Length: 150
Length: 170
Image (tube, rainbow over all chains, first blue to last red; front, side, top):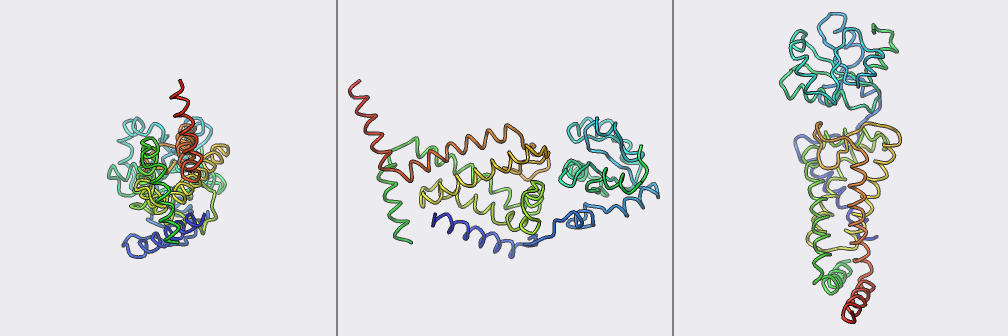
């Protein structure tokens, strides 16, 4: 038990020490609340609802729904393309032309812990799309704000 | 403390020095922990997101755990491979695996579709599921064997002698 405590303390010290020294270190105590997730935080991938609404109204953003087909069919953001993470490669093949039509790509799914949209955003960023964003808990916040859905 | 660790090392060498199975198990489990910690140390931002998505820790502790946990895994992995400070290393490995399994089961029950974050922080890594839990249970059993063999070497030696005597009589 003594050794276990010693290992934990050692790991904490090494972890914090290396994080302090490295150039891409992260904040030791970061606010991960839903509020900060809905703001423009971290690496800038996340977009807040107001900004997403603005891009939607300017018609400069294409919304990508990363949820399964049943959820998409039950309701989605107006004009959104169904782009399920589980079938990301076939979805990309089917929608590759559409992705170039708008300046911004906004990925969303449902739930604050849902990472389908993050995964999709990283996939598209890796493919070279420059303006890919994630609207965290997108379906719920969009619908609750009374914005256009279909 | 140094005397304690030294004494433990001697006990281990005495009772497990010739046991290839024990050595194989602890080196295997050690390699698993080293492999698990390596990618997380390289990508703390991605791993902190994986920790956050489990939705089990207070927000303020997410990054703290994401920074310390990979180093704990690496440290335990190295100690298991080298075979020193074994009681603590085995017990820590066992405790970590218990915690991982509990976290996976809780999220399975809650129906959260999260990436495991077990061996890779990549977005394309597989989602946590029953297979992940079963894999961790297998690792847990290996850790349990190492814990028992490390903490109770005398009993293990007696058990071995009994087995050998039985084999001889057969």
